[in-house]
Image (cartoon, helix red, strand yellow):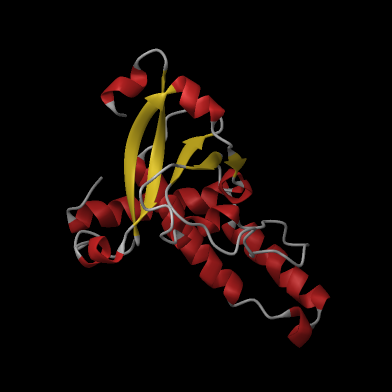
Length: 186
């Protein structure tokens, strides 16, 4: 946690900022992300005034976060890395796996809804898992191809396997292990 986030009157969040084209070209550290993920502290008054949106998918995974647009100089640069945070999670709904927004530009700040500390690695792992989940959802048959009942049945099975705190927890443990093995975190 940043040093001044623990001070009275400050709050901690994780900023997810999209890379501009020159930044992306220089991102040799981790090509899994098209964004920069960094911890930030801010005055509590600013933090509390942000227009937060809860992430239903992260709550289903046991990491309840909220997201707000963060003022940044690159506020016109697409930030597709965060779209998964706005995924519809009800497998009985025809919008299961779709995201609420077509696009999102600029940086966002992410924080835990329950006020607990949130680390950069947790956010990285969450974004990686949401990418994996999205690819699995893309493999579901279309309702037009197999019928709505079949799609809903398969979506419920996928949700039971992948939309759980246990599934995310197992993925996150493996992710951290891979990061340590690669010498880029832990």
